[in-house]
Image (cartoon, rainbow, N blue to C red; front, side, top):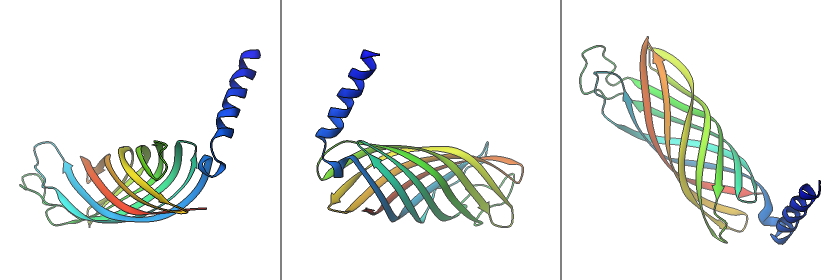
Length: 185
């Protein structure tokens, strides 16, 4: 019992030593960037397709951690190097994510580098072929530059999802590089 009180007291003192504005913050923000997608399927070679992506995030920052809700959309075109099993070359693949991310922010005054890990639902809608939804992971890192209540943020992530499209088990490896704003309240 004494040990629990001691730990609680130490944590309480640590929290009180950090300025209140730095402890907890709620933020919203849009972002945009590029999505570089390269599908994978056994014995079929795809080329990487890079396209524009846009999204929105909302989060809560508590001390060094940020818990955020994240949504993005990107419209890729499938680029195949060979068409032996099926012909998807040139078809549009509407790709999206909705889920959550945990960020570990390194506590610096203005420049805040961070690491991110996320999990959520990925959607792949291949034009006139199939729509598939799967859960998957993402991880990455970035830098947030906080200037008062507004922060500029740059982030790079690896998205990994696997879909069953038209009875084919297709992996979608996707790098996203984004820049945006976070507005703190």
